[in-house]
Image 1: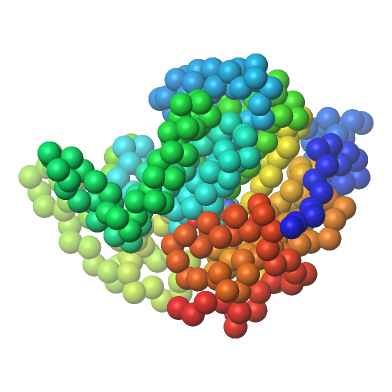
Image 2 (image 1 turned 180 degrees about the vertical axis):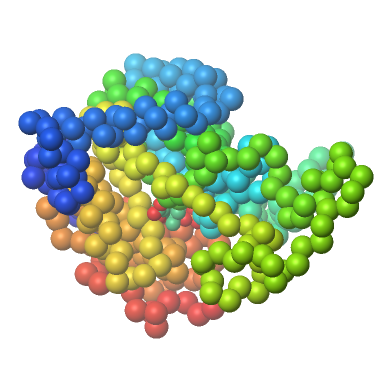
Length: 392
Ligand code: PAZ
């Protein structure tokens, strides 16, 4: 079994480690209280982001639901985990036709939520709308249509097919038990801004839980977005046909040779006027605000996804140093279903992987991974070699 000790008290964050890069020093050079200035920078970013961007329509309702849920479990002395799951979208228009998205299906989050429930946690599942949910995930996004699990029984009833019955009954019982005991609250988000508003509200509500609060941040959160002042109201047009709607004279036909070209490409095949150039700002990094302000006593576990094995551990370590939380779980896009690396303060990195004989290329690979991390599995000091992975 795994021996990975996570101390609940966070490492202290000395000023020297807060000011770890030169840009931070520049920001603080005029202040006699540098740590306050750094703190203010995060507070200002938070204030600006949450005043300039629109709150989701259901924020109040979600806050009320989460508050009731947390109070209910706090009264019972139960531990509560906030699991975030799935990808956030970045809308390109206010009346959104197009948006940028990412690959995450919510497998890690939905699977982990089931394991947390099994261990006695109450779970707030903050997930991308229509991504995988605990329990229903076994059927909703399966390769076959969920109707393939069923057939018509006597007297107009619907019956599970024999071969699925045992597992379905088990999953159904677990699901009903979680529901009856009010142990699972599911709240959806779509955009990056919706996500951040609800995350902040719930993290702040969890504050009174102290060390009984766990924040498990598995959502794939966009690093870039279109700020509100640059977002157009209507669908972005690909021609100038709409310009002529109140005008009887036809729009001039563009002569590609007369166009000015942008500097992204020295010999572009398509003129700039016909391209869609998307200009994104960085999303402020709110992990510092979360760790220091929103839920300072909670245990905070973040995930780090990379595609380049050379930088994964370094980036996980960097995140830990910068935000001073409890654990970063690193994973690579290509191997995330079979192994992760745990990076925690003062401990050697641990690669935890599904044993070779269970490393099947299936949609539920993450099931194995989360189960292994919860109950034991292969532990290593280095990432898997590609030859050790299932084919395909
Ligand atoms: O949702 P999924 O199971 O397809 O993928 C899980 C994951 C890779 C999004 C998650 O393990 C993760 O690394 N989340 C953090 C991503 C990041 O912002 O770096």
